Image (cartoon, rainbow, N blue to C red):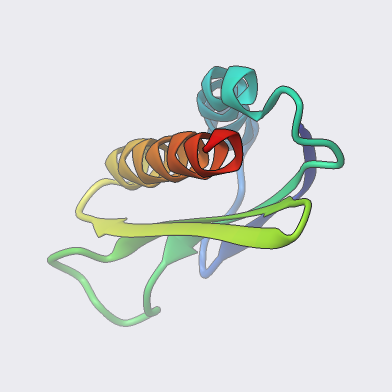
Length: 103
């Protein structure tokens, strides 16, 4: 799996955020073996510039696998929680896709 881009929306994208995203995607990479080419684009950031409270951080993963686009998105009060939840959603969807290919 190749990460094509990591974008920060309404947010300064630090090395710590990039590293965290890469670590979360590394855990999903084992499920994408055999699905080549496999590219993922990541968008993390705030939902708006003016909101101060509530679920303001979002993470979105767009995974291109042969014949399909698998998309996962989550919004949380903490950026790292949003990344975790979106990665879990993506992982589950990749597993379901691979099971469908086997069946």
